[in-house]
Length: 103
Image 1 (tube, rainbow, N blue to C red):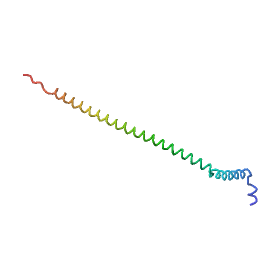
Image 2 (cartoon, one colour):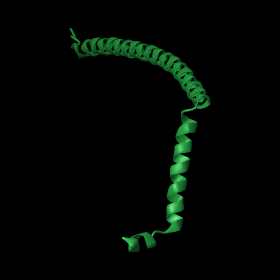
Image 3 (tube, rainbow, N blue to C red):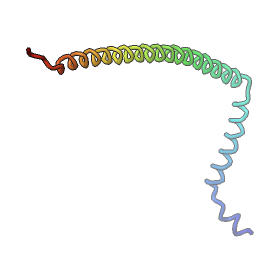
Image 4 (tube, one colour):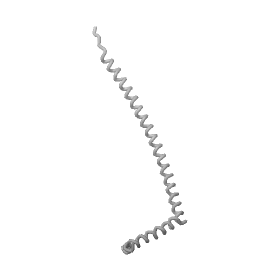
């Protein structure tokens, strides 16, 4: 047992003790009233930022829905125009195919 105590490294022991000391002091600092005020202020700022971001997201979503609806209307109009054009071209082709009767 005495052999083990003799082999303890003073540097490592000092580093461990310093870590415990800073850890304990850190806990005291982090749980202080000033630290709590800082946490509250930071959390409030994050919540304000979140609200601002959510408003922006809502505006973007509304704009995207409007763009989508207008794009659908454009495609429907183009499809209707294409159908009308096809119908007219079929009528012209049918008239050409009628035989001309010579007397």
